[in-house]
Image 1: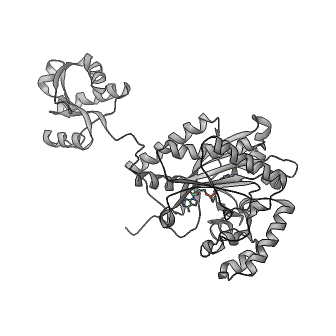
Image 2: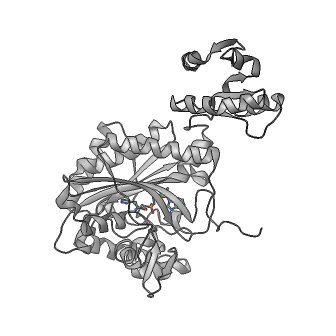
Image 3: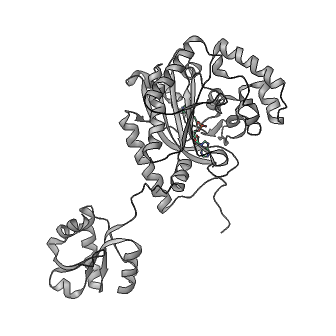
Amino acid sequence: MNMQKPRGTEDLYYEKASELSALELMLRSLAMQYNYHEIRTPIFEAKDLFVRSVGAETDIVSKEMFELLDKKERAFVLRPEGTAPVIRSIIEDKLYGKYELPLKLFYLGSMFRYERPQHGRLRQFNQFGVEVVGAKNYLLDVEVILLGYNLLKTLGLTNLTLKLNYLTIGAARTKYLGVLTAFFREQTLCADCQIRVQKNPLRGLDCKIDHDKFSNAPKIYDYLTATENEEFVAIQKLLTKLGIPFTLDAQLVRGLDYYTGVVFEIVIGEAERKLTLLGGGRYDQLVHTFEPSLDYPAVGFALGLERLLLTLAANDIVLADEAYLDAYLICLSDHARYFAASLLLLLRASCFRVDCDYLTRSVKAQFKSLERLKAKNAIIIGDEELKKNVVKIKNQQTGKEQEVKFDKIITVLSKEKK
Ligand code: HAM
């Protein structure tokens, strides 16, 4: 067979699939604790949705989108991120008129970016994201940051760095961009940045090649308006009060153009080995850009699930219930196999995890399967037992074996489960 999965994609099975499912389950229940509601949007959307929100000059839109033309030659893309689709749905489905404001939404799903695959970077990856739409209140910025930070802490991760910056807008941004452009004129820029900084000087600060060289660039948070500064300080004060450590990073500009206020990322590890687990920020104008009659400020973040799973594995943190069976049926005859079908049905109806052999294997081989499947009990069924209306139940851990009447099997297994 010469068919292979596309580069930068993954097949998930058994342990890895269980880990992802367990993580999704945990994220769903956490989101619900914070009173967020689920939203699911299509996996492909009009290309223009991302051009107008994420920004035509960003790497995501200019280089990384998987583009599709439908039969009528309309341009669609596999969604590279979840924020723009959520905002589209809020406007198209008028969610702002149907549900309590602010809308507090979360999503789990696959995103697609045509990037060079490497450790923690895929072409199809999963994000957990939250978006709060319809309120401008720094308490919500803090709630969203707290949700992201606490979920990583709850999972047992340490060595986390929360980085904060504030992307001012309007005249203050224009003034800052002027100063930044002057700074870049004095620098030797890589070929990419020579073009990027002409279109959007902020992108220069994010340069993958020269990032460290620009640490003495003018800092955007020194150019905030009085109101913006007050808000940024209030966010920092509350984070400190809540015991959430952070560092200010004036070079944190994010790879998407829609941000209009505080932006943040949570990074784990240091230097070469560091990985950005989540990123987000406030984007107050996106609803208005899509639909000028509406004005709903918003804030949110997205977390990369594969990156988080890599990090959890590196820290020996396991989420999925270790695979096990409550019992494995050992059948000593054809008659016993026939009887096993009814017993399996009965036990599964009572919520036990049970299985038996379907390859007509020897008793020794059945016991080997039982061990491989980590069954806690063996239920041994033979012709002699069936004549007496009993089975033997052997606890694999203690070695204790007992003869159990058919009508007591569930009671005994329940006891063995404790
Ligand atoms: P982003 O920073 O582009 O933000 O992506 C968020 C997270 O997705 C990253 O921190 C990373 O963990 C994961 N991620 C991104 N690209 C890849 C990749 N190629 N492979 C694996 N994981 C990846 C957004 O997407 C914004 N929509 C976040 C947001 C929500 N801002 C406001 N609301």
